[in-house]
Length: 250
Image (cartoon, rainbow, N blue to C red; front, side, top):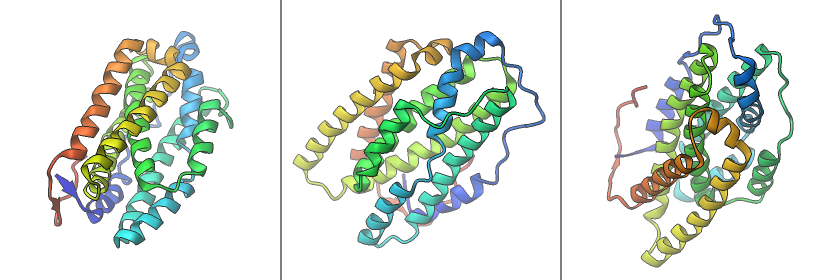
């Protein structure tokens, strides 16, 4: 089912009121767990702190073209939710006496690419790929430790990410409705190249944390290909927008 922008605005407004992390719990991460995941934890925390201004610039341009003034407001709350993830991860890093980082090669590369991206379509598929990888990463991070505080942070993020991917998949579906057959085929080919490059970069940068969480390279690739093909299948599904939806349950 495809939902309109008001639906997603309502969802994000409601979801941002949810408090799923109990900060009264003290961190209990072991030195072995810390050695396996800290660098990746720091890198993903940095990646979750973007101000989203380049995404919003593309969204504003796109929303004006399709006459949907509510969509940018929904995206603003989507970005705010991502920033919440960064804040929680940062607070956890502080609590275990580690330092937050301000620079990482993967984050730097991604930021440089998005500076030049003004395409809503490219933004959407990029976010789908990264958010899909985030689902696998945060599940692995959850499984790599017995620290209840970190596990609850991961659980909160995983709940949010499921909705984020649905949000972006629906936008990709909407964009695809304006394309002809050959344009769709070309787009999927380009998406595939972006997907292939991105997932290998993510594995290269974070394989130690994935393995600590029980995710081998083969399993990571299998999960990512499954998520990617599901998104491509969804973009071709013949749905009709629902104009008066109920709020997504959390």
